[in-house]
Image (cartoon, rainbow, N blue to C red; front, side, top):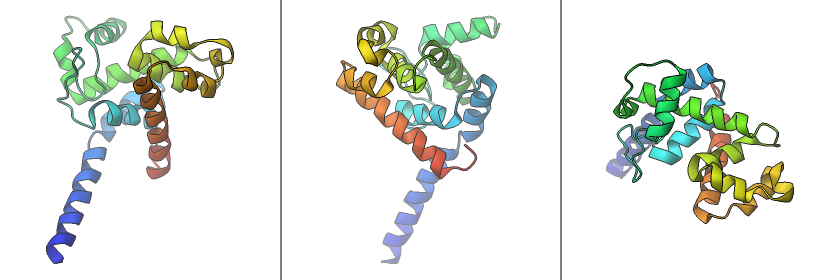
Length: 175
């Protein structure tokens, strides 16, 4: 019984550490680009499960699964010369590039009731798909928009991240 209890405590401790070990990078990037840190952390949770070495099928890298194009845009905006996409495997660089890109998307949908829902759909499925789903009330009402997302995976992606961001806001008083 003692071994089981010790195993449970170790498993819980490892999970606690895993979800918090990059908080300083997440918080710094979120503050720099004025993005909700709980939202950034929720994207990290969904995209990589806090694995800084994560690699996606389309060449995405790191905690926030940054694509080469988004990383290059960030590097240009920040005037970082000779930037290489593989630098996104560094948690600090990755969260900076990801928070910057997320802020760009949030600003794109600022005339809606919840820009995060639209920005997350864009982050996952791309702008061209989001434009297809912006019919009628969905153009400004996020609840309607999420229901009209044409890809079930993207719809669940948006819902999961929004739920997780709420969880982080409640669980971590620093957010």
